[in-house]
Every structure is written in C-alpha cells, then in structure tokens.
Length: 300
Image (cartoon, rainbow, N blue to C red; front, side, top):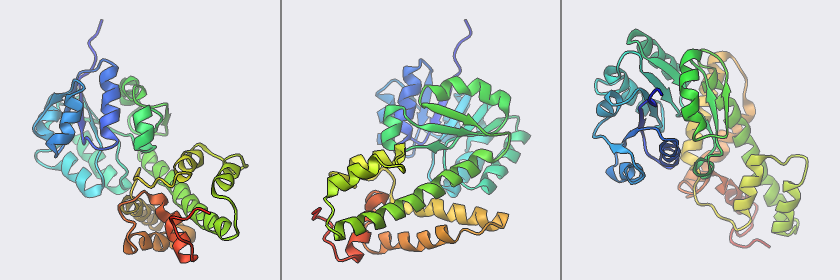
C-alpha cells in the first residue's frame, strides 16, 4: 500500500488547530508551524511534529497548507526567501485556505509554476465552531490533478468541497459568499432592533425567524448564539472589514457596482469606533440597538 502524503500545516489559529486535528485523525503525518509556540503545541499535543520555521515545515511535507489572516501575511509566507515556495520540493502541492485577494493569489500562482509546485486555492466557508465540528465547506480552484491528490486530506476536515475551476475562481467565490453574509448580518441587526423596539419577545422573535422562509444554516447558527446574547468572537469586525475591502477592490477591478456593500462597510466601521472590535461581528446587533435607544443587556 502506498504511504500517505506528508502534510505541513502553517498557521495554527482558531481554524487551523481543529482542521489540523482532523488531518491527524485521518492518519496523515503532520508537521506544524505557527509564529506562536503555544499555538503549535496544541497540534503537537494531538500528534503533530513541531517545526521551527515556515521553511522547515515546507521542506518536511508533500502537501503544504497555509491559514493566515491577510494578503501581506500570505505574501510573506508564500513568497519570502524563507517561505513555502522557496523551500518546497518540486512536485509538492501548496494549498492556501486564507481569505485573500485574487491579485496576490495570482502572483503566488506564477511563482509556484516557475518552481514546479502545484498551487491550490482552498478558502474556507465556515467559522471556528464549524471547523471544530468538521462542518465547513472548502471552495477549491487550481490544477485539477493536484486537487484529486489533495481531496482526501481536505475531506478529513470538511463536510463539503466545491471545485470551481483552474484559476482564481475560489477566491472570487469566497468574496461572493461573504458579501451575502455581511449584508445579511447588517439587515439582521436592524431587523432585531426594530422587533425589540416594537415589543417582540426576544427568543420568540428569533425562533420565528429560524422557522421562516429566510432560514439558512448560517442564520440558525447565529440565532443559537443570539438567544443567550453570546458575542464571543467567531470572527471579529476587523477581519470582516478586511473581507469587505477585498470585495470592494474586486468590484472596482471588474467594473461592478456594489453600493449596498459600500454602505455596509461604513456602518461596520462603527463597530470599531464604538468599542465592539473584539467581539463577534454580530455585535452589529448591539450597535443597532444602541442607536435605536435600546439597552443591549435588556432583551425585553
């Protein structure tokens, strides 16, 4: 029987740790690197091999995954002299799970091709809670042959995978999904403030929405947290604003008008200026309540 490919995981944050844990459960040998030693140790405790740099992790793997916060971080991790592409062996596969711009992704693709590394775009639709339960969806684009090789690994940590094409399609698809999320979240915040101001009972209002025609897996998951008013961050407003900026940049580059997304960005900037920056992005509910004269700790 052929041995399983060696996997490298770079970026052990709220999403990376549970995803790496599922890879280990699948029997794959896993090496891990993260800037914070304490983060690395979470996967080491599950059986991963600790490495001391991106370069060491890349050299130790046949398939390298990265999970980083933004364009600048991915550019450094992928393209720097101690990065993935400078140290991965020819024939390796590099799969990035981050939410980044199509432009930086295309730059990485060009360099990967020059070095004989197959580059997959594998951004995640989900959050830390769904990553812990293996309930995320992976959006995929890049060389189809490389995807066939990597798919069993990705299946170990996700419920669904969607292959979209050979280029940057997964990057655009992630922005499309998130554009719907941010607009829906803002509409939800305003609607709940209206309901409370009109005297609707909080839990009954949320239950009714969950059973209405607009119900979705995302909405039901958020309602489960809104009932106890749990705003522990699954994703912070700062990261959501980063994603909105990516959407608007892509819209400008493609000549697409996104007035609602532009307005939503201005509204969500208020979450930072009014002190909700470290809470979950659904703290948009509390901001809408505050601006409507409602006490955010009073559900009735």
